Image 1 (cartoon, rainbow, N blue to C red):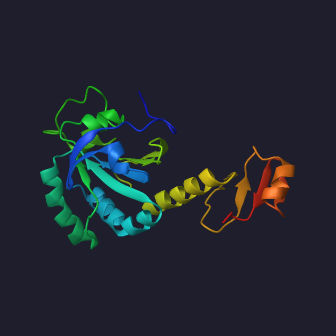
Image 2 (cartoon, one colour):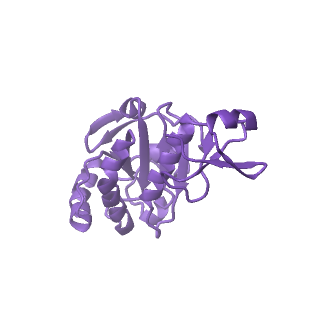
Length: 218
């Protein structure tokens, strides 16, 4: 069954480059970004893992941990980490999950149930759909899902942007417009009446009866 926003993120136990984890326990009380890869030593994924290593501190500032997954054993991941550093200049300090039996890829509906039970003999093309991003909240529910084609590197600055939006809108009765960035105007949600908006967001603007904007709440 496919996973949707607000579904409970499936829990699992797995081996990683930093030892065994239980996913929900590993997340703790914060946020998590799980991003997957079809195979180790693939060119686009090498650049992506390095990009995330370079952004790790920015995710940490937002209370978010990052964790990668590749449909290969942990021992292979550790060797790949050397190439990632050589190519991107960034050291992978976050854990990489090993999924040689394809269990987690299937659990998260990235591979079909009949994909087999081993990564052996599988090409990146066979695992092409294991290129997803899942943002999971402190409540262990999925807040965002994205899946990219193999030939298009992911934009992880966009994941940071979305995380900023999700965290802001979880605290305030606002939504964020297209291409929103930190510090820009936001939209007052339809759940807020005009009378309530006057109190919460004094000086708000009415663009259309259904579209009201205000400065980003602090």
